[in-house]
Length: 281
Image: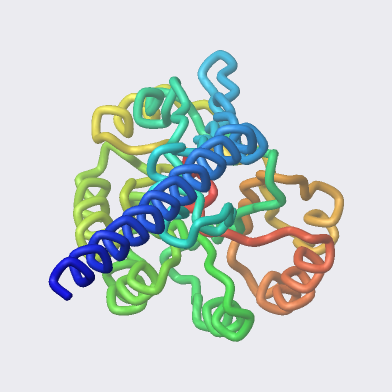
C-alpha cells in the first residue's frame, strides 16, 4: 500500500510539473509574441517633434512629439496578454529650440499644424470685461486678456478668477510702458496666484526696448500678426488661420459681435485656446 501511494504521488508530481512547464512555455510564447507585436507597431504611433520656425527676431513655437516606450508598454500589456493600444506608454521627443531658449524673440503665432487659435482681448484701463467673460463662460471657452495696471487695481478679484479658471492674463504694464514699475508688479501677481507659467508682454510692432526689458524679466513678448480694432467679425473672417493669435480691442462693437465671432470660429473647425495652451510645446 505504501508503495502504491508513492507511485501515485510520483505520478501526480510528474503531471503537475508537466502542466506547469506547459503553462510557463505558453506564457513565454505569448510574451515573446506580444513584445514582437509592440516593436512592429511602435513606429505607427510615433509623433515626431516639430521644431519652431525662427526668422530674424520672430518665432513660431514648435511642438514636442512622442514615441512608444516599448518596455513600459510591454509591462502594461503583459497583465492582459494581448496588444491594446490604449495601454501604450509613451516617452517624449522634445524640440531642440524651446521657447525658454528664445525669449529674446517676438512670438507671432502658435504652431499651425493644429486647428487651434487664441483670442487675445486687449483691455484699456476703463474697459468693462463683464459681458465678454459671461459670453465665454456660457460657451465654455478659455481666452487671453491683456490688462493694464489701472485695470488690475480696479478689478483685481476678476483677474484672479480669470487666471484660476484657466484663462491666460497678459501684462500691459502702465499704458504699455514696460519701463514702469507696474510691469513687475503685474508680473508678480499673475505668475503667483494660479497655474499660469509665463508672464506675457505685448507689442503691435517691433520694439527693441520692450523686447529687451521683457527678456530680462524672463517674460515672453507677443507680437500678433492679426490685430483687429474695428469690424471684428468681418476682419476675423478675412484673416483667421491655424495657430493664429488674434488681438481684439475691447469695445462696444466687439461685445455685440462676440457670440457671432465664437460661432463662426467653431463652425470652421477651430478650437479656441488660451495663449498659455496655444504656445505649449
